[in-house]
Amino acid sequence: MSAHPDTAAPHDHVFLGENHARNERRTWAVIALTATVMVVEIVAGTIYGSMALLADGWHMSTHASALLITALAYRYARRHARNPRFTFGTGKLGDLAAFGSATVLAIVALLIGWESIVRLRSPVPISYDEAIFVAILGLVVNLASAWLLRDDHSHHHGHQHHDHAHDHDAPAARAGHRDNNLRAAYLHVLADAFISVLAIAALLAGRSYGWVWLDPVIGIVGALVILRWSWGLLRDSGAVLLDYLPAREELPSEVRAAIESEHDEIVDLHVWQLGPGHHGAIISILSSDPKPVAAYRAQLADLHELAHVTIEVQRRAA
Image (cartoon, rainbow, N blue to C red; front, top):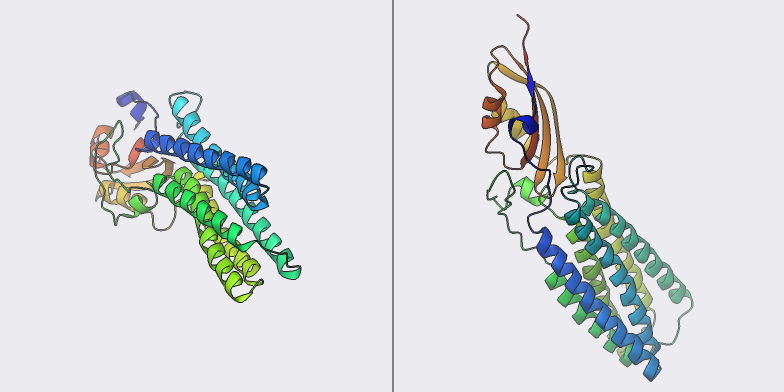
């Protein structure tokens, strides 16, 4: 016999993260902050003839564009969360946006590295005081943005099926509940803040000791660090998109522990992430003493990460 939760207990397929609405609002706030500073810098740079302000203003525009990917993904996922054409909801849309943002971040890092190599080979004059002012301004804006985009690690991941809390040390809390879309936006501003800190140090040393070479060297180091960050985001968001479960994910073994017994054996198990804090599972059970599907479902009640479960039960041949 077999059963599907859709027939036993009608439910929707909204698998968005618990803080989806809050994260969307914060992303739009950061875009507004970034766009405001961008306009101020471009206008001031034009009026006062400052190339440093103009360059940083246009640089801010690239960050606003990258953050726009995050915000639009949140909006689209929310507006289409109950669209039946999305078989398992729109929970993975954030991971798709994160993958795109990580790609953009990697390209930016490569461009920074290339420009740094060019400047290392052919140094250009630097207006240190003006450049330091712009770097400090950028650092302040990015620190404020990072604060807005911080992950509060609130682990009351309720959804329409369960209300529950998680231990901070649980693997699922570290991986399955992570909002990669928010993480992508956070990495963008964090990377810029990191570059600003390195730039300020290099500019101060260059102004004090005449180390013109230090600025491009710091640029290369920063590019390598950002490439590493972007690779981590590409790996994690790509894993969700491909239904890959990391080795640290314990949910499959928890499902087996909850179901298997002297009479019941799981012969086929598929577990995948549907969205932040939500997993789906298809479970095929071979039993010498089959129970009603509702009984097996009850055995899984404590596994709150399971938001969509399909169970198939077959009697073991005598």
